[in-house]
Image 1: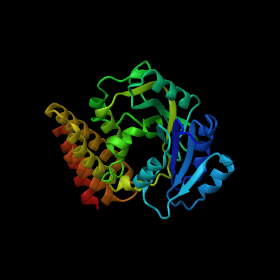
Image 2: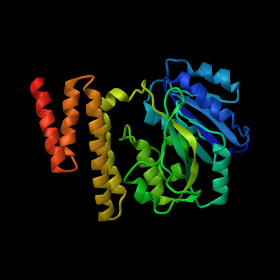
Image 3: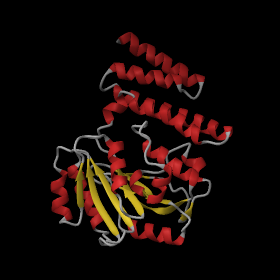
Image 4: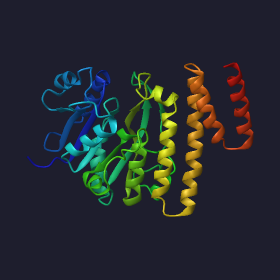
Length: 307
């Protein structure tokens, strides 16, 4: 069998209900087995995704299951290692794509042969597929984004379902950083942007899902996302070649850490005060100015006294 042009690799874990939408969105754009590989890579789910694959895929979609739960980063790495195509689309089992995604992607690689990755504008949707908001356009036209590394290293502009990457890139640069547990995709796209030009489609053709059953919600309240933001700040600064860019990353990540700590604090108030206090400490440490810092010091003291 000849090498397919694109591999759609779908890592999944306990999201069989949402996997139906994911698979349907890909199969509606099926380019045929000569051009497109479609495979679900399951991290030992308990909700029987193989039944969904058999029902919807009808033999067109292959299924691989880990022998035991390996967590999402290793499952992503397995997906990449099993990809056969020249271009890889890593599509999470609860996300989906919109009509035209694959044809426009292939057109971009043909029109701009120098690019090694390409992504689209995206929607953020809820568990019922309703659009919550649409990512702001990076530029108004399709094409290569100039100086994109300096943007991506300081903030996250790419949601995973919206990006495809040449297989050769992963072979050269490696895959996702195993030291990161929540921001591994951000670091991966920044690493790619440092070494290669990246294309952009100025149209929302991918949907990133947020939903109440996310396995990361409680970890966020406990501050794991904050810990991972601290880890990625070190990694991203290591990718920078100038002191000015390292300072830009430092200031940007500190702001992002403060913003997430504040969100975690508000969510933790409904769960446990100890987590609220933990996130308030982060708000105080990463406050953008002294006025804000003193405000959260007062809030912290009030909650601590009541506790």
